[in-house]
Structures are given as C-alpha cells and as structure tokens.
Image (cartoon, rainbow, N blue to C red; front, top):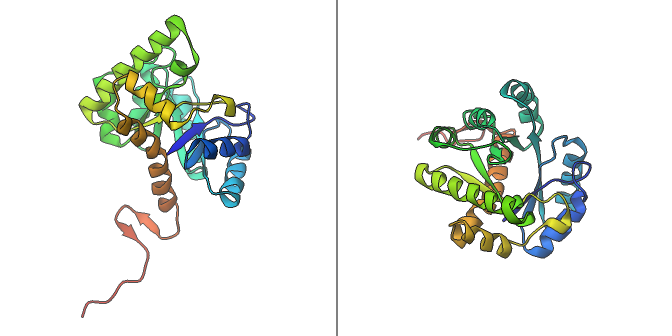
Amino acid sequence: MYEAVTATPDGESTVRRFAATAARDGFDGIVVRNADAADPALDAAAVRDASDIDAVDATEIVADDPTGASGALSEARRDHTLLLLRGGTPTLNRFAAEEERVDVLTKPMAGRGDVNHVIARAAADHGVRVEFDFGPALRKSGGPRVQALRGLRKLRELVEQYDVPYVVSGSPASHLQLRAPRELRALGEAVGFDAEQVEAGLDEWGVLAERNRHRRSADFIAPGLERGQYEAER
C-alpha cells in the first residue's frame, strides 16, 4: 500500500521523514506529489536506494483552466514517473478525465469541484484514476467535514456504477498528518467502502508506478511491443 504525500518545500516534512513514518505505519511506499517536484524527485530516488520503502517521484499540475494545464503536461510526462492533475472545477475535472497523459485526477471534489456521469465515463474510458481524497474528512470538523463525506459518498457511487479506476489518499502535507492504513480503512467504511476496496485504492499508486517505470524503460516501445531476444521459429 502507498500514500501520496506533499513534501517540502510545498509541505512541512521532508521525503525522508515521510518515508520513515510511512514505513513505521505499514505502508510499502510513498508517492511524492509536489507541484514543483525537481528536488523532491531527487530525494525520492535517494530514499528508494537507501531504504526498504519505495518512493515514487510524481508531480501534481495545478492550473486555473485546461489551457494552463495542457502546456505543462508534455514536459511533466517526460520527467516524472507519475503525472497528477489537480481538479476542483467541473471543467478541470473533465479535462483531466479525457486526457490519457494524466495518471490521476486529484482532489476532484475540492472547492467548486464535482463529478458527474460524463466525467466518470471519460475517466473509465481513458484509464485516468480518480482520487478519493480523505484529507478534508480526516482534518476538518463540523459542516466542512460533513460536506467532505457527502462528496466522497457521491464519488464512490459514480466510481462503482461506471467501474472507474481510483486511488485513495489521506493527502498529508506533514508526517504528523499521515494516517495508518487501518485508519483510512475505517474512514472508507464511513463512506460506503469495504476494507478491501480502500486497500485496493492504496495499492493502485504502486500499480501505476510499476507500470510507468516499465514504460519508461529502454525495452518498452508500446503496449504489447518491446525490445528483446526471441526464439526463431523452427
């Protein structure tokens, strides 16, 4: 299972501190999701080489509209293992869901964000994972927490109805905000998931990372087509 974290300078804790806390809490890896991921990407590589926990370099594109997001996609796709695009408006959510270069649509229900059947179908068709961001439900109280839970329940219903691929995260910006898998499972059950579904969403970060690392390897040409030595027909 993996957790997607925001490390320094965007967050409050270093990649190494996140990795140590995540390992103690039972995670197999972390995804470093900084918007400007140059230094954290180097830190992720160092942590991956020096510890038993995986650290995946990612970048989260944050833009006001699809035009601003589109300009950053190509360069980010080349430079990072995982490419995330932050939603938060119906327009950005739909753009991300229809963009095959995007691995994960993050925070789709934040701010003015919403997901409908059109966006859900697009994400399913293009293989874009939709993030269940448990962060607001974990760290807010009162009305904002109730609203966050309501949004997660609606998103879960659409994901199940249209078989949309998804990831789960507590979206911590500090190692002190990181929650163990058992706590995320408990919150997931409050919005209608069972424990296995929450674990599948945490595992999916690692599945994506493994797929993309393979695709960036020298042997990969296209899905189903790779370089290698093959036995001649007899």
